[in-house]
Amino acid sequence: MSDSLAGLLATALDTRADLITRLHGEQTDAYRLFHGSVEGMSGLTVDRYGDLLLVQSFHQSLAPDDLAALEAFYATTLPGLIPIYNDRSQPNSRICNPLTPEQKVAAHLPRQCSELGVNYRIQARHEGQDPWLFLDLRAGRRRVMAEAAGKSLLNLFAYTCGVGIAAAKAGARLVVNVDFAESSLRVGKESAHLNELSTRPRRVLSDVFPALRQYAGLGQAQMVRGKRLPPFPKLEPQQFDLVFLDPPRYAKSPFGVVDLVNDYSALFKPALLATAEGGTLICSNNVAEAEPDAWLDQLCRSAIKAGRPIHEAEWIAPEADFPSPDGKPPLKMVVLRV
Ligand SMILES: C[S@@+](CC[C@H](N)C(=O)[O-])C[C@H]1O[C@@H](n2cnc3c(N)ncnc32)[C@H](O)[C@@H]1O
Image 1 (cartoon, rainbow, N blue to C red):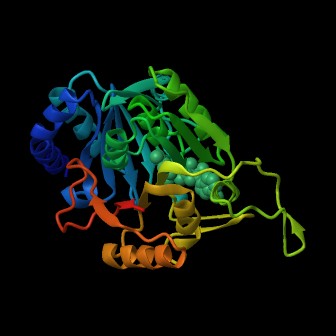
Image 2: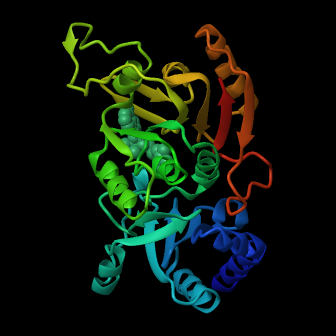
C-alpha cells in the first residue's frame, strides 16, 4: 500500500514539474501537490503553503504506514517542508487527529506563503477547519489581478479576503470584503499587512444578504414576517467595477438562504445590480454536479429579468495542480461582462 502511494505521489509530482517551475517564477509557493480524487487515492490531498506541507484526508483516515511513506517521499523530493497531517474523515470534515506536543507547536505557528507575488497568512491548525487560502481559486485571483488596476472591487463571502488582497496588490483603487465571520476577516487583515498595497482593503463584517441588497439599492427591511432581524451595518447604495461572488454551497442565516443548487439567483441578482454598467461580475459555483451550461443559462435568464443582460461570458478553470481529466472541474468560475 505505502509503495503504491509513493508511486502515485511521484507521478503527481512529475506531472507538475513544469507547472511548479512556472509558479516559482511567478513568486508562487502555494500549490496542490496531490489531488487524490483524480490521482489515485480518493479523499487524500497534499498541499504546499510556503514551508508547510499540509496533508488532509477526507472520508477515510490515512494509515500510519501511508503517512510515514508520504512524509519520507516529500522529505526526499522537496526537502525542508514541515509536514502536518489533518485527518478530516469525521462528520463535518472536522480535524480529529491528535498531534505530538512538537507537532502542535508547528501546526499553530503563523506562517506565510506567496501566490503571484502576494503574501498570505497561513497556519496548519486554527479555530476553523479549512486552510486560509483555497488553492483552486488561484485562477480566479489571477484573473482579478489582471483586471483590478484602478478599479473598485466588491468581494462577497470574502473568507480571509484572498481575492481582495490580490486586487489591492494589483492596484485596485477600492476594495471591500464582506463576510460575517470576524475571525476570517481578522486573518485577512493580517495578510493585508504582509503586503505593500495600493489601498487598504476594507472589511465589512456583515451577512452578505443585507450588505449586498443595500449596495444594490434594494434596501434591507428590519422586520420580516413580524420578526425583528439581527442588527446589520448600514451601507449606502454603491456599484463596483468588479464584483467577485464566491459563495458556499449552502448556508442559512436570518437574512436568507445561500443555496447554490436551488436558488443561485437570490445572490446573483443583487450582485448584478451592485456591478456598475460596463463592469464585470465573476461568479463561482462549487457544486460538483452543477452543469456549467445549465447554470450559465440560468444566470443569463436572471440577468435579462433584472434588466441587466450579460454581454459576454468566459469560463475560467482551476489551474493544472487541480487536474480534471473529464474536463469538468468541480469548481466552476465564469467571468461576466455586464
Ligand atoms: C467557501 S468560503 C468563501 C471563500 C472565499 N471566497 C475565498 O476567496 O477564499 C465561504 C465563506 O462564506 C461565509 N458566509 C457564509 N454565509 C454567509 C452569509 N450569509 N453572509 C456572510 N458570509 C457568509 C463564511 O463565513 C465563509 O467565510
